[in-house]
Image 1 (tube, rainbow, N blue to C red):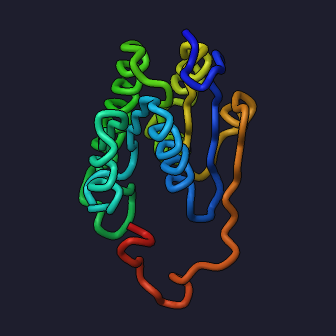
Image 2: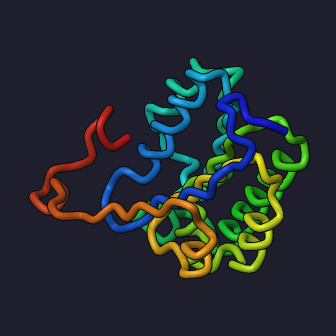
Image 3: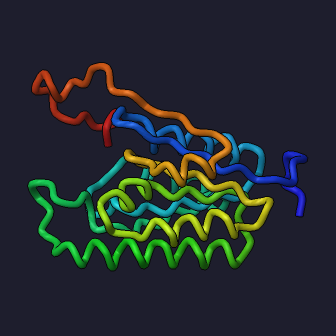
Amino acid sequence: MENKNGSDKGLVIVYTGNGKGKTTASLGVALRAVGHGLKVCMVQFIKGEWYYGELNSLKRLEPNLELVVAGKGFVGIIDDDHDFQEHVRAAKTALDIVEQKISHDTFDIIILDEINYAIHLGLLDLADVVRIVQNRPEHLSLILTGNHASEEIILLADLVTEMKEIKHPYKKGIKAKKGIDF
């Protein structure tokens, strides 16, 4: 199957690192892809119970962009009221959803948001994710975001960008800002 952009081979893209902008970078690709009439699905593995501005803005890109919020929120932070096993189940459900989306073969790009972090936290088995990346249809591009990308994922990728924190307003006591951080 040939992508609408003329290339028949999808890419594996990884956005990782301790700096901000990994999900935002993947959303930039999604915005560009939708502009070309491509179909994109974003499955969020960690984010889930907080409100983010992209939840509403991405609805405006339907039907070319589908967002699946599958996580139970950030693991182990102050207001995390979920048992660790709940996070594990949510991450495994998200991975099942990714496999279903791949098997339906209706998307040009699937974003696995915060999957690297889910692997790092032990919510998912790295081998399962590697298998999905290796067995995806050749035309399908996958974007894997999240800090702590494993060496195995990096080796599988065609493009890896590391976001590096140089300075962060939180360290000055400035709280997250609507429209910038969420």
